[in-house]
Length: 362
Image (cartoon, rainbow, N blue to C red; front, side):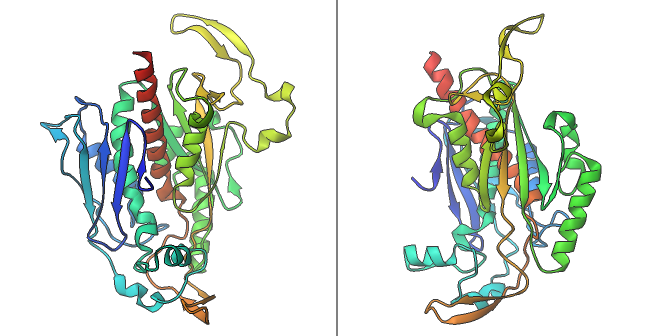
């Protein structure tokens, strides 16, 4: 089902950018989990538009309404339905492109596939619908807390400005202290300056988000087509504007020799841990598609936002040459608002895989 993700923990989403609301249904939420509405709202606030000078000025409060599956502050095990109402649409901003295909958008492909498209803000193809993922991800994080599994994303690159060190060299708790959500203050300032420069030109710019999952036990993930990294990759590539996914050493490690990249095993015996672990973690916490107990880390590449506030050449629905001059409120860089989306998708995938893992052990 194209609008549903997950096996035991499942999310189905609905809604369009300029419709009455965006929403979803989460099925498989374990019963007895304390539902922290403030936490869900906090996660949505991290994704919401209008949160800083380097994001779109669309002013949406993005207040979530839970419709079912919660009683006296706890999950009941029934499906959790929710909506977030759209309150600040300016659909008239898109009237001038009703019959024109915007470059690098889904306008053309949606029109050819369905014979109709909602031109207001991209409709179903809009990044606004990702707020349903953030709600589901917040619910998943509440469950993962019981297993001491944490998920932390951060902006590691904007344009050609990138963090130069391994994620372990940074205090990831400082991620939220910068507008761009980069844990290194000096680098964050350079990133913000670049985004503002690009914004002033009516242009956009892309970058990379790194995500680290800590505390995942050994054995999560399925062989062959259910590999944990394959599920994470599919989830990340389903996010608007994502063009690439790599985990562990990724593409960079392809130039190494095996003797450099192999993670050697070692025996561990102390008051906190008994067993086997790896001396290095070039594998990114996953081997054979199954978690090995080390940190799971991966990177997600985002293209520059396709909506430019400058004149572009294109064609209309009849194939005739046309000029497009986009209006409205748009992000010059999607990275700051995409960090909670990446975390949410990681939480959904990890919880679903963990529930399958726990079921297999029974």
